Amino acid sequence: MTIEEQIKYWFDPATEDLLVADSLFEKKHYSWCLFIGHLVIEKALKGHFVKMFQETPPKIHDLIKLSNKISLPLNDEMLDFLADLNDFQIDARYPEQKKAVYQLATYEFTLNYLTKIKELFEWLKSRI
Image 1 (cartoon, helix red, strand yellow):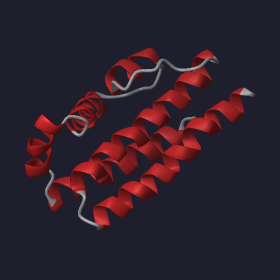
Image 2 (cartoon, one colour; image 1 turned 60 degrees about the horizontal axis):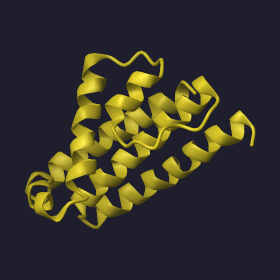
Image 3 (cartoon, rainbow, N blue to C red; image 1 turned 180 degrees about the vertical axis):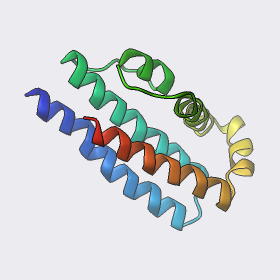
Image 4 (cartoon, rainbow, N blue to C red; image 1 turned 135 degrees about the vertical axis):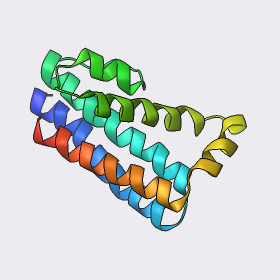
């Protein structure tokens, strides 16, 4: 597989996942919307990893660790956002932590995060 195909391998499903996140939001499954939003950004960062190193990205889900491995001009606000998204990826996986996410993930909260996820994804796509 060429590098371009490998990048596409990460970005195409991320684009599809963003549609899934929108669908989950519309159906008021806010915590799952945020979980899928994390996957969107994770896949985009892994696409950048492939571009930079021309190898398979590490099997990690931590957005901060992934972003530290690649050379992108992420500002403090973006890094803080990635740290917040990490919380949704972890919390949505474990039943004992889901309750906190359910309470936090209101319509307004999720809409705000989903909007930022879309903006960051477009930013990442524009730099690939």
